[in-house]
Image (cartoon, rainbow, N blue to C red; front, side, top):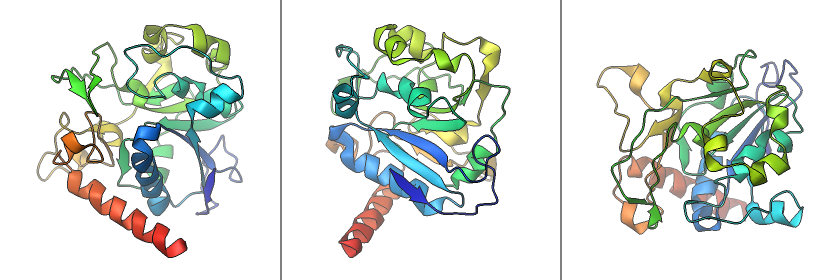
Length: 253
């Protein structure tokens, strides 16, 4: 768990200026470096207090919170554990879940300012149908409705519907039920601009249109930490951030 002290006058969690904004990042041992760079990119730019926690499947299993068997369509260890976010946040306030293969280019404060309490969750409503058959390090590229909606979600953790996301539900419900937000009505799913979950290889930057410039790049097909994706779009930005993180880590040690 990491805290970064920012401007304490900003409201980040249910109107309580004393609470840091909770961020849960999906963790997979194969993408440890991606997790560290994602975390670094958030902390580097935030102007509000944040609390970052990795969602580590082995830890959840040890605590008896996660026990479902892994199936062939799970490309990461957090394919389903992500939906424990409201539980892990004690069903209190707003919290964010994000995949580890993100690079933040803007202050997370800007994202929290989009929060609207009338919604149970808020996310980018992608219309994404990947062409590739595989991704990352050869994982199967699955196609399903609302793909990538669950890769970055703002959760209204105290919402009555989200209190139904118990460990029992997360461990037993289908992938369709969870990834398509079927525990919610459509009008309870708020929308966030796509620049906050900008899909590398899918979304495009329009020249001279700042509204299309990414605030958070999602290397959903695979990032430059994988050999097969070292030359993907925006690889240079991730590599620069990685070098900065490594230098900071070296100076601390």
